[in-house]
Amino acid sequence: MKLSRFTFSILGIAVLFTSCAPYVNVVDVQSLNPSMSSVDLKDKKVAIVGNLYYADALAGKAGGYLFDSTLVASATLAIKDGLEQSPMFDGLSVPVYYTYSSDTGMIAKPMSNADADSLGKQMDADVLISVEYINVEGQSAGYYGSEFTSSYQMYYQALFRLYDLKKDAIVPFHMRSKSPEIFNYQNSDGSLIAVTLEDAKAMLADNIGRQYALRLAPYWENVQRVYYVGPDDSNRYLGRADALVQNERWADALQLWEKALSSGNKNTKAMAAFNMALGCEMLGDLDLAKKWLEYCKKLDAKVNPDSYMRVITKRIDDKKVLDESLNGLESE
Image (tube, rainbow, N blue to C red; front, side, top):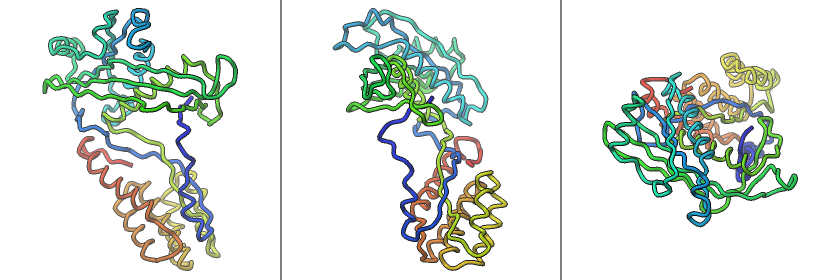
């Protein structure tokens, strides 16, 4: 199952190309992105602490908010899973430790330095990630029945703290909704599924934990790329390369696109150059991909590479950061 927001829109990049009425296709690829945090976890031993509070001790407190231990546990395990999927951890297991308390006065208060040092030694960790609390309130935004729906209107707030034990530093991070957000619950094939409110809360807590993990370590992201399959020259090089792309035969596709560069009119050449940039990106040569987009732009045809140029330029900048954080691991 996957979680998405109604605010997400369907890929609209093809709209850019309607002026020349080309035929375009979309391919799903993976992109390696740098972490979104200034905290460097490279070569650090990381452990996660989930702070669980007895829910019955908190009922009716703080305006009715219920800091549910189930949500903290969901977020804690999501952070563990998110970090372990990062190339930075490369097969390492991130240990988890749970604290249990009914002392409501401790909610959201930092661990003492002595407690953090003690836990760090117990878990053989240089860095502790502490899940302080996760709070989710929601109501139905669509109806499948009295207890089940596929969409909910949610408010949420979360607090995480990162303890760098070697530097004796604490880095807090808050996540909260400023206004109610609608979340849509789907199967992996995109079909809607009906879930209870409690399950929806747990799934959102999982999503919150994964979003926090993305801040801390480089991560793979599924993205889409557009490429041209026509209008084509008489040899149909663009169209014939389509099946090769869908089967990830990038080197073979590049050979056909290179032929299209010398056999078509200006627009065909521009489309082939755009596609050449995609092939180079997929084979890891971002600088050459940028040069092909510059050539596409220079042709002054009915193909606008500006949006893709911004993507490639950002990836080049990101790669410099990744090379530093991953000891030279190439982003592909």
